[in-house]
Length: 513
Ligand code: NAD
Image (tube, rainbow, N blue to C red; front, side, top):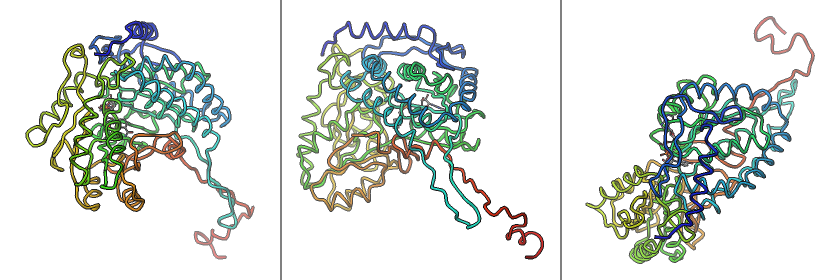
C-alpha cells in the first residue's frame, strides 16, 4: 500500500463539503438545492467513505435550468465573437488559477491518481478552453456570391439554441469542458447533467464560468439521475439539441427520445479499441503502449486499448512482456505520490468488471491479475491489472465494453486477418496500429473503421483534432473546429439584386413572358 499524505485528502474533502453546502445544482449563476426529494452520496472509491450528500435534481430543477438557459440565449447568441472569446479566455485563466483545486476534487470523486488529474485532466481542460476562446472568432459560413446571377447568397452560421448535455463519470471535468465549450463558443446556452456519481468538478467548472464573467444562465448544471433528471432534460421542449456521452445502451434510449422530439442529436458512445501489432513492430514500444493504453484511468476510458491483436511471431513474447509490466504497476491511494493505478469509480463498477473476467475464465487464460487486491486496499473499489490471452474473437470479453483495467490479447496471421479482426465489433471509436512499415500503417489507417487511428501510440488527444465515433460508437465530434458542425446550424440568406417587380421565373406560376 502506498500511503497518501492524509492531510491532502482531508483538505480536499473539507473544501468539497464547504463548496457545496448550498446545494449541487448550478442554475442561473448560483448553487441551489435539488428538489426531487431524494439525495445521493458522492463516495470516495478509494475508501468507500462518503464525501458529501446532495439533493438530487428533479423535473422542476431541470425546468428551472432550461428556463435560465433560454433567458440567457438572446443576449449570449448576439454577443460578438470577440466578446465570447474574451469571456472564454478569462475562463481559461480562472481554471488555470484553480488547477490544483480541480485536480484534488477530480481525484477525490473518481479515485484517479493525482498525477493523472494534474497532468492530463486539468491541463487538457485549460487547453481546451483556450482553444475554444480562439475558435469562437473563427466561426465561418461559406463566402457570399451571386450564384443565381440575380441574387446575392450568403450563409450565416447560427447557434442552435439551448443544448441539453448528458455526461459520464469517467472524466467528469473533461466531459463538462467538451460539452460546454463548443456549445457556448458558438453562442448557445447549455444545461449539463453530469453523472450523479461525480458532479463536483462539473459544478466547479460552471462556477468558474460565472466567476470569469459569462452571464448567468449561459452554463447550468443539474445533478440528478439519468432516469429522472436525464430523461426530463432530453425530452424537454425547451431544449433544441441533445448532446450525449455515455454508454451505447443509454445512448440508444436517449436517441429515441430526442428523435421523437425531432431534436438535433450528438452521440459519443462506447468503444472497444483494437491495438494491432504487426510482426515488424518495435515490441518494447508496443508493450509499453499496450499497458499505458489499457490502464489509463483504470481502463475507464472510451478509447482505451481493450483488444490487442498480435501477429503470430511476436505473440507469446508480447503476452509475457505485457503481463510482466502490468504486474509491476503500483496500485494505491490516489493521493499517494507513487500510485500508478487507482480504484474504479465505484464498487458496483469493480464488481461488474470482475464478473466479466470471471465469465471468461472457462474459455480463456488469465495471464495476470484477475482479482481485487487485499490488505490496505480492500475497502476501495480496486481491481488488479488483468491480461487475458487466447479468448475467442466472438467471446464476450473481446466483444463487450468492460470499462476496467482488462486487456484481451489474441494472435493473428496475415495482415488481412489483423485488419478484419480489428473491425469485428459493433464499435468504432479508436484504434492503433503498431508497425515500422509505412505501407502497413497506411493500410491500417485507411481500413480500420474508427474515428481515430493512432500509429505507434495509443491514447493522446489534442484540442485541435476531432474526437468521435464510427458505427455504434456514435456520431458527431467533440473538440476541434469540427465540433461546431454539431453546435451550429447554417442558414442560407438570399437577396434579390434586380429590383424587378415581375421576375422572369414568375411565368412558371402565372402568365407568359
Ligand atoms: P451511462 O450511459 O450509464 O451514463 C451516462 C450518462 O447518462 C449519465 O449522466 C447517466 O446519469 C445518464 N443517463 C442514464 N440513463 C439515462 C436516461 N435514461 N436518460 C438520460 N440520461 C441517462 O455511462 P457511464 O457508465 O456513466 O459512462 C461510461 C460509458 O461512457 C462507457 O460506455 C464509455 O465508453 C462512454 N464514454 C464515451 C465517450 C466518448 O467520447 N465516446 C467518452 C467517455 C465515456
